[in-house]
Length: 448
Image 1 (cartoon, rainbow, N blue to C red):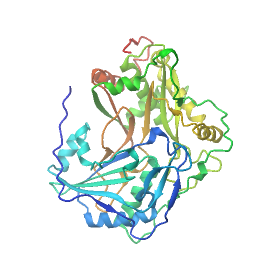
Image 2 (image 1 turned 90 degrees about the vertical axis):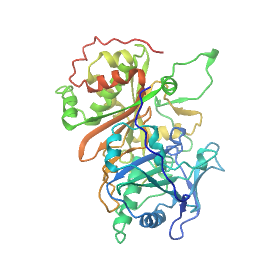
Image 3 (image 1 turned 135 degrees about the vertical axis):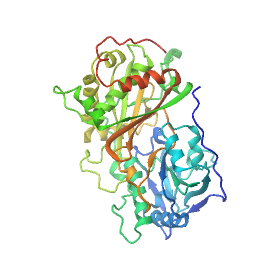
Image 4 (image 1 turned 135 degrees about the horizontal axis):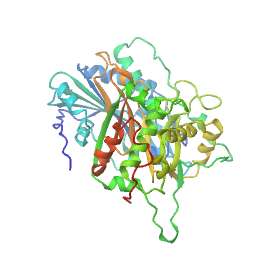
């Protein structure tokens, strides 16, 4: 097993505290939409920020109490709905966010060196709340870790049922603004209500939804192939590769002049194809690419600015492993473009209605999932002592992240964990941007 450098342990001088809103907030149950409470999203989005200078803990706690007045659902608690089976809601009770203070014997420079390859020891930087279930974990947990050199690491765990990536960025910028410039009004006022994404009554399912599958018993004991289970059973190694503007232009040129595409479309297609090639999947397998698409401006009427709930859906591109690998990159790009263009108001409304069926789950069986954290402004969060030197996830997973690159808005860092046995092959294909491999001679073997 590839050995990655471990972080030292965190030292906690005090028990974590609960930070409550600094003034009274509404007490009620907040409805969560079908996009919010999907089982696929029942986890916390965990961000890690590295700052060169420390930020006063007292000021951070005070500003957090102030921003929680505006974002009071994050100070509440998730619970099962008393009215609808298998549905969640937020009890807006003002109980508070968890705030942990720690020290780690490491410098900013040492962490930056380690940050090239994330590993499981990074989880030490987030206080683990002892809980019986997902519902018992507060929607917002924060740990601020001061470093030997005077720098600081700020980690946040924000419940994905409450916020999506855009929503978390909006909240973090609000907290940072109140910390650095407490006398200014918030740049964006939060919109709490989720009723704009309520299902229709009766439901109108007018499309097939390949992003999902019904969780029904298999007939005759038939066992479907499931790449997701296979990946989870393997020793995984994180891959973290930065694509500069020139790399991305080179990828896009492989589709010119026959096809114009965005940086995301080119890089998503390239990553999907490299992943399938590295895993040597059976040629006949139907493989999917699921990727997050913001639909706030695709709906009619558009969702108002300030909406911080889940305003994204998964686009779904699919094809056989053979066609994806043997064709040139344009094939994958076209599939991604078609998946994006299908996400109309009618399609999204149909999806929301479809999710009324609680036996439906996201189809991860043969899918690579890509979540885009770049272009959300996450790397620009500034608590008053400067922007971060590093921003990224707390750990690496089988879900692929497109991450921002500090100091280069157009660059993208692609991070995903793959089986150790295919790690070198995956990185080789990812770095092979010249297009020479797209000659139809690729060997597709079998691992499952």
